Length: 368
Image (cartoon, rainbow, N blue to C red; front, side, top):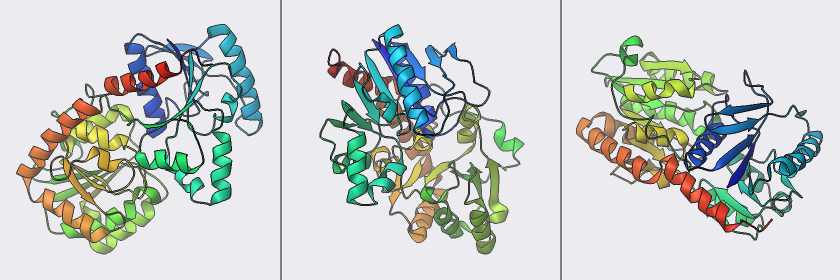
């Protein structure tokens, strides 16, 4: 099968969509499929065409402003089709979606982000506009049931399926790391990891309020990520006396994240909006229990009291209590971490996600 993955967000960017497309493409290539990625010149990766990690990556130099971006990318895709004859066009994210209209191959669309939910929440007019944008799509995939429901609410009448994000369970594993000593974290400290962009939708200020419940305990709060809410987070931590227990690493390249997870003891997902969180999956594969909110795709990750604990979003007292429970119970952390690792291997490995996605593609072969 020839598969074209179309995305505005790809390596070397870090983040959910870029990571998803990279890993899905690699896993599809490992299954023996011919994978092309159509993206943009990004960072130091600007070659027009390159064989990379089993994929053929194309980076046409197209102006980013709309509607010129959509027009030129649409014309480029038509030329690409006549050269390579892809069986499927799989669009990731809203930005390149318009350009996939009137293409010869069936279009699959993965609806990744919580920004879609914000658009739908604007009212009937916004829902109708979103439905119009999806009319040419043969099948919609989404990494949370919430996003699936929002797609149907927009009036999309085609098939919609939940397929989780995935994780590389061979790269993200439990194991030793020297990073704890390098960061000056002592052996008796329990490391609570928040590996997120520090933005409002990720509930980072709620987390900063919640950790007041850990005051006086031997804990280190590790922040792997940056963003617009960092000053607010640090201000809250200074007020509740937990700033001196905190370490801010800034944005950490994904290549360095396995070591970050290995030095941690538990991982927090305090989100207001979330798909099947990639950092949650990476934490699980690394053997960490999760404390997460009952939103989006997070409940699909956490088996309550088996792989982690679930709390309501926006409730710092309950979140703090859950964190306190795991900080104070090392045996519970260990058993949950073992179960989380096994759940990641059994249900969320990229090889498994790629097979599910390929099954969707096969439903639409010869329909273009």
